[in-house]
Amino acid sequence: VKFTVEDHDGNRQEIEAPDDMGLSLMEVLKASEYPVLATCGGMALCATCHVEVLEGEDELGDATDTELDQLENLPEYFPTSRLACQIRISPLMEGSVIKLRGEDN
Ligand code: FES
Image 1 (cartoon, rainbow, N blue to C red):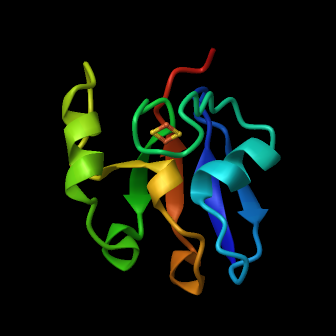
Image 2 (spheres, protein in one colour):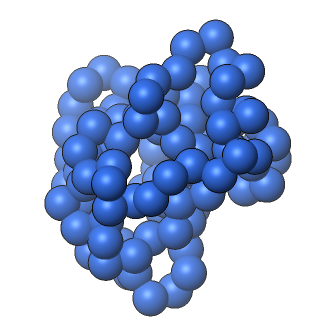
């Protein structure tokens, strides 16, 4: 599946990821060398993998309650904010646009 990632500087890049391996978006972002701390290792506990879905949010489904709890504790979050570790890479992500919003180290 191909989708677009916008970094903290506003630079966009299309990335391609396998959608049949059960990977999370957080894992793919890290593997693509984006600065995602993911301190909790994908347990929806640290919110350092915060992203904003700029396009394609309907296809990605709703955030879980656990996710929302974390997002609501952030100093700043957006109507389509998500935790990247809670998004599974699937064919539904085709064409979506994801903006990095977590701490960038
Ligand atoms: Fe910690 Fe996603 S990696 S909340």
